[in-house]
Length: 356
Image 1 (cartoon, rainbow, N blue to C red):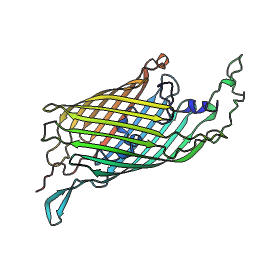
Image 2 (cartoon, rainbow, N blue to C red):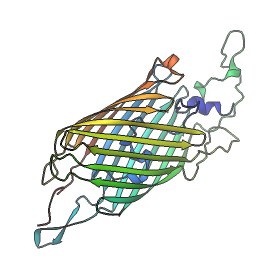
Image 3 (cartoon, rainbow, N blue to C red):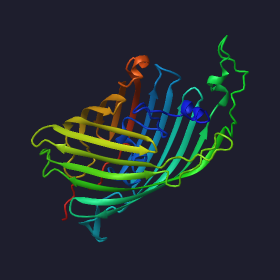
């Protein structure tokens, strides 16, 4: 019974009758700080995004999750001047350090269980060849959790005749309505990037694979008096690929994640097909490629996720919808919930600059 309030108030994923302890998004590739700290600054010189998810509105009090994140390389350009007096002479360099800041807020269920977190991420990159590198990421954050005990209902508060009676003691020893704790994470990432051999060839290949570990310190959860429950560490294994079909305007982007947290596990995999509308600029990189992407993903034993991603230069908007397929679909009538994402990323200065 003492775990009932955590189940009622927590964010859940129906899969193998398990409940997730962490907030999550269907557009998981757009939230690198929740996937792997080593992803910080791995894709863009600078990236800023916001995301909002509304879930289970058709079943109960909707679960609402909002996130905002920012990450950047500490050195913007991949080219260094050879001599300050020779303004057109450059040498190829390597961005070795990046940092990020993220904020997330979540309200879950009838008990309004709230999670607010702020985390800082730092990643360092090690070159492993002309096209590949490894990165190590560390993350530290502060988390606040809240709950409204007055909105929780327990089975022993039904009197057997007239129904629910809030005046009947529920037998629970509540702790604080709010508590704060520190949280730490780390991760490793392998990255491969081979750009187009020439503009319009569309033969680029980009891939990454990594593992992240969250809640390394296993912080205590203090909703009930006399309990010593700790948050399970979470392990995330992920991978994605972007491969252009040569001499066409089409790119294929499959991806997959596998998460384990205590008795809970989650698997999401799928494919996005991108149609490119415009190429990058040849010399500066300030004109960015535009595309429209359509994707279908599957969260095992839970939902089919339909996703559309529109990238127009440095801006992107993504929309996804969870079509519930689990046993909960009997009451949800397949409606899981919508999710919307907005992203901005800076151009890469001197992207195609050659050594003069």
